[in-house]
Length: 186
Image (cartoon, rainbow, N blue to C red):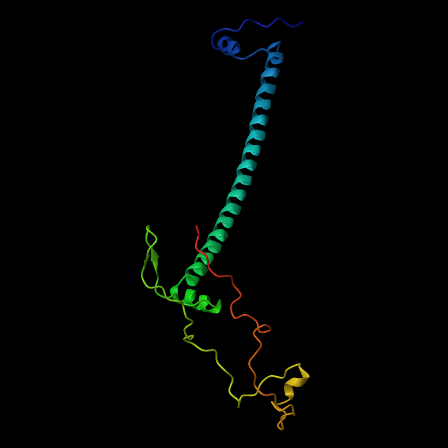
């Protein structure tokens, strides 16, 4: 019926040797293909994890830069406050508000116990800018005190307006309610 295949000659024989046979060699190739697929899949997963870690670090870095900018702005604002409050005129004004007066002439003690110089007591000098007093013609705001409408003699004023009086320092809000400036290291 059919003849067995004739042996190939020449060029066909060389091509047949290069082509793999369909026998046991396909079974040996399967583990290699699985190994390559696993390596590629593991590499992709590692690349994905590395990329997400870099993104997380990038977000953290931008957050830290924003915090640094905010803290730098706050530090500069605080430094401006310190600079404005440590100017000589501001220190003098705050000292006068606290009731301090300029010192007199100093005296020094020598190591042997003698006094050098002529010490004098500090005296309060008049403030350079007296507090403004309201003029009698300016209308004053109404006071919740019922006796406030009475004049100096105890009777109500004929015009019905409240006379201008000095505000009570205990109830008046402080012009500047900040603590006195301190210098570092003292």
